[in-house]
Every structure is written in C-alpha cells, then in structure tokens.
Length: 205
Image (cartoon, rainbow, N blue to C red; front, side):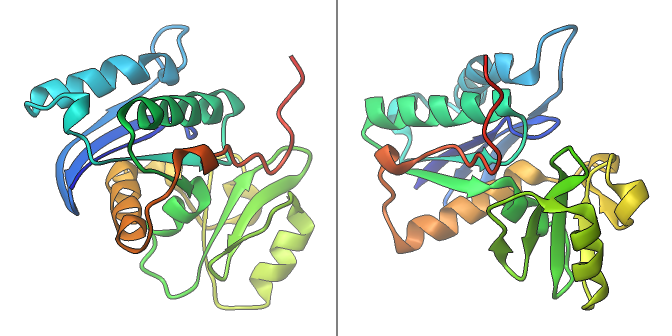
C-alpha cells in the first residue's frame, strides 16, 4: 500500500511517502521569504513522487493533518487531500496535530497543549481531544492532578513548562504516516468525510 501524507498545519510542512509502514521518503519545508510553507505543498508532493519513481496514480491512500493549527495551513492540506482523493478515488485519512505530537513522547501519559491565543490552549489529554479551547489556568490545574509529560510550543512553554516540539527536529511526517497506516488497517475512510478540525472558528476574511 503506497501512502502519501502531508501536514501544513504546524510551523513546518511535512510530506512523507511510505509503503505500508516503511518510510520511503520524507521532506520538511519551512517558510521561504514571505511565502508560507503551504505554498510549496503541490510542488513538494510532485518532487517526492518523482524522486521515488511514482505518479499520483500509483497511490493507494492519502493522509493529512486536519488541525488544530494555522488556519491557512489547515485549509491548504485538507483541500489538497480531498482534491487528490476525489480525483484518484482513494481513501483519505485525517489525523489531529494533537495526536501526532503526542507520539513524540515515550511517556505513558503524554499531554499536548498548543497555543490557542487569549490565554487558552488546544488540549489533548488521556488520548482524547478537548473540542474547545481550555484556559491556561485550567490546563495547569489538570496537569497538577496527574503524572503527565507535557508537549507544547514555544509560546506556552514558559508558562506551562514541558517540552516544546519547536525546539527539536521531530519526525512528525513519519509519525503521521504510521498513524494513517494504522487507521487504514481498520477502515477505508471516505474523502467526503475529511474535514478541517477547527476547535475555534477561523477568522472572518
């Protein structure tokens, strides 16, 4: 099973190609000049496929991060995933950035808290996504009630402590790929059901 996954929700873009759970190629793209990294998504997908001797028609499934994260990034990767899956008649799997980040920890009870602005956080705790922004005061209270390891970002680390995923190169594309592969073993997701995970509504344009 040839699986293409990508993520433009976080501070870097990840594009990974795998055969089942074996990683064939993984690229990381950062913002360039004044262009947000998602502007390079299509060209990077083409590059990864070409370097490995494949075309889009060879793919078996598509996977993507659906958020939370950058509103621009969430829109970009979910739109491209839906478009490719529709055109190629492929299953499309969505995975939350919170679940992806939880896998960089080997702790038994990882917690992920990402900046949601207004003194609040997007929270993943006890293998569950909190589908609303949680106040930082409440996050601190929850963390103090158990033996948790916190994964967070540069903005919240000075307040909450823990590990910032932005301070080290973690293989987030590879993690996303393996999560997608595991989900595909149990189901065949329909691209029509792939939707952005907006825990807070996107800004009005």
